[in-house]
Each structure stands twice: as C-alpha cells, then as structure tokens.
Length: 289
Image (cartoon, rainbow, N blue to C red; front, side, top):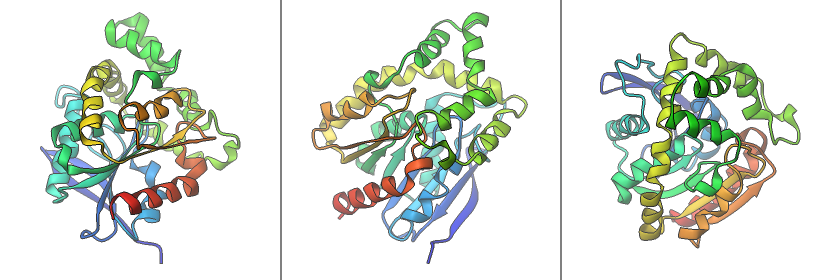
C-alpha cells in the first residue's frame, strides 16, 4: 500500500507555511528542504517512497510554493529568516531530532538548522545542496555574486534572466540524458508561482543575500569535523549550477561520507528517483539503526 500524503498548513510567526506530511509520527523524522525556484512539489514522488519507514515532512519556504508570500516590507527575505520559519514549523510539529534532505536553497537553510542545534540532526542527504566553494560552476555564479556585491541595473539584469521561463526550464532539463523523463509540470508550476506580482523582488532579495551562505561555510565545515554527522551525497554530476566537485568536497571534512555521482542534472529526482530512493533507504537504514 502506498502511504497517504497529507497536505497541511501551519501558522508560524503569523505566516502560513504549507507542508506535505506522510508516515507514522512516531517513526524517525526526515525533513525535505527544497531549492530555487521550486517547492515541496519536487518531493511529490519521494515522500511516499520513504513514508513506509519514516515520518516525512516537506515544507514550502516562505515566498515559494503554497506558503505565504508577504511583501518584502513585511518579511526579511534572508536565509536566516527562512531557517527561522523552518525551525518554528518543526518545533510546532514536535520534531526534536531529524535527518534532512537538502537541495539548492534547502542546503543553506539546513546548514543553519544544524549550526543552531547540532544534536538535532541525525543524518544529512544532500542532492546538489552545496557547502563548498568547489561546487560553484561558472558562469552561473559570477552573475549572482556580482549582483550580491553591487546591486544595480547592470548586475540585476542577469538575475532577472534567471526568472524567465527559459531559465526555469533549463534548470530541469540541462544535463539530463533523456529530457522526456522530466515532467513539464515542474517548470510550468514554478513559472506560474514566480510570475505572481511581487515575487520577482522576493527572489532578487534572496539572490542578494546568497553571499551570506558562503560566509557561513567555515562554520559548516567545522560542524562537519566536530560532529562527523552521517552524510549521503546523491548528486547530479551534470549540474551546471552546483558541479560534482561540490559533492566530492564533503569528503574533506567527512571522510566516511557516502558519495554517488549520477548522470543527472540539477533536479536529479526527476530522472533518477528510483536510484536516489534506494541510496537513501539503504543509507538511513544503516545510520539510524
């Protein structure tokens, strides 16, 4: 029997947070943290694939998916603030300890959760969720960091380009040997949500804040060295945003890290769901036993 997936909304600090939930609340918790420009929709197939054994929670970050989208004057769109909301949701749900799956933006949110309360993290699965400068692929990141350093019309143009339908589709299809495996629903949904009035400014705020994640890396690396947290990297090796060097870099501080490079792109779940699921189930069965 396929586990039922519930679609719920909680209020955290006055903001509605949409999340998907499945599995026995008494089972070990696994929190799935999505990236840009998507939502918990990216986990729609993974959640039931894990929920027979785990309590799975996948929230939409503020400004994404079906969660609230307050105006920038009413919410500080920083990665610190997104981590605050995620932490508040988990506390409200009574989730004290959890493994986390991080991808893209989900990684700096997850790293903040780990730095704030290292003992709460039981394991980490990273799927193109970066923690090392080795992972940044040019020229994609040149534009982001130029904009973060000197926001203005000249540097903003490239960032607005990342919000176009062509760029969103590219994130899903580049590096995928058979793009017909990737459902167009992904980029159609993401683009519709990005196109909501005011969402462009929200995304620009987060682009400007991204450099704070890099500043955090030395503390993240120290956390890895001190905790030796079990880590599985299942990485789309053809990703032109976070390249494969970002996956192998985890071995610098976590020599026991389990690293798998897949012939996939940025959203590897779309083409390699079964492979990733098998890696996750095997990994969690070993480290959470």
